[in-house]
Image 1 (tube, chains in turn red, blue):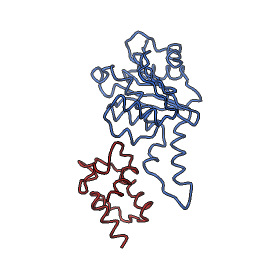
Image 2: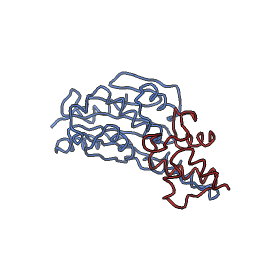
Image 3: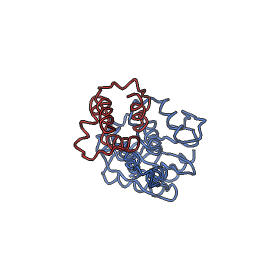
Image 4: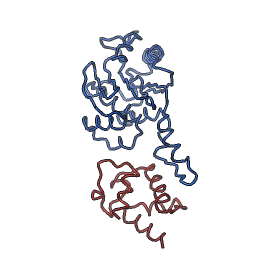
Length: 80
Length: 204
């Protein structure tokens, strides 16, 4: 999950943020990290670029991008 | 009717001048480092800054410094404050960065975060969101800074009652370098908003 946090910080230009600043179950959007809709699109690009995973159904996004934990679980499930 | 330049910020070659005073100097050569250093120095506490493209950062920082002691928001309604900016190269550097993300068919990952900054008026949007300005706005492309055009346009907006104050100027960034002049025009002041006075601060 640490690697994923580093990738999120780099991809989304979260300046001044360290992987340890992101809680595994902290919401990525809204009151958590405060990401926006463009960040959501960048996360979709990250998944495809780094893990070869295409998010086909946009409705899936809300669940996948809930937290770093859900994102990591989704990546693992798609790997398998 | 006469209008007046009440405040200005000029950023060029790592030097920041606000109202005739040098307030910051960076030894860095690239815009990315310069605007980051200035940001760290003035600490606006605005995390979205880091998501902007470099030319938006330049305009944002210049506006931030220029507005610092103007008390503008307490003197006008949001809809009375406009923004009129101009440059020569549009967002060429950002356009090129976006092109890099789609250049290679085997590494084709168009970046949404870069794409949204491939228009120069996005800079106006960023400044407007930060300060909640809601007045008239426009971004013009001119071969070089055109003080006659800008003064005529902004004076017309104010004299026709569209707005009462206007952030205006020139924010340019290309492979040839960067420079920003953002100044405030109001109906009262000491320095008349004329071509001659604009050129004096532009050439600081």
